Image 1: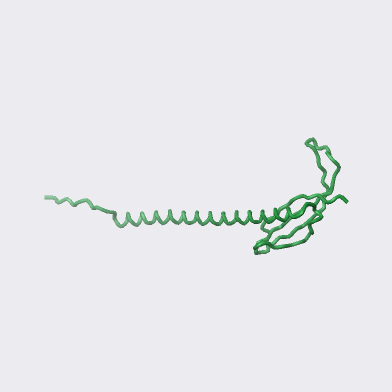
Image 2: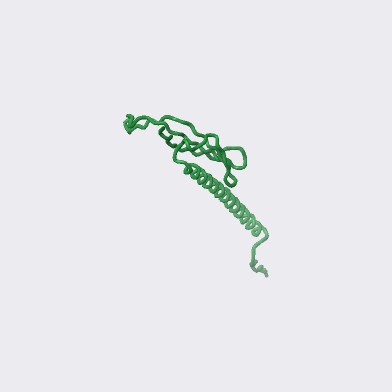
Length: 132
């Protein structure tokens, strides 16, 4: 007479190991994605902070004369440098014709640095010079 084995009630060792490998790969991918998201959020936060600093510096003066070219400063962990260049502006309409008389304006550039010496961000704005 043939004896029948009762079906096993569980997973074999090989099935359990395959399931663990799949779970480890999934968790590793999730860990990497979360880590990359944190790095990106940190970089965006730094850019926003630098933009606020540049905005504060630009807002500190109405005219380009009020800025000193080469002036530097620090705010928190950021360092900044201002450069001013006088340029002639020729306003034109859509057809390319001069609208008003050309005037002198200051091109204000603010370079904001982090803890290392590389420029992290540069901001540019135009301000008029005072009329003598």
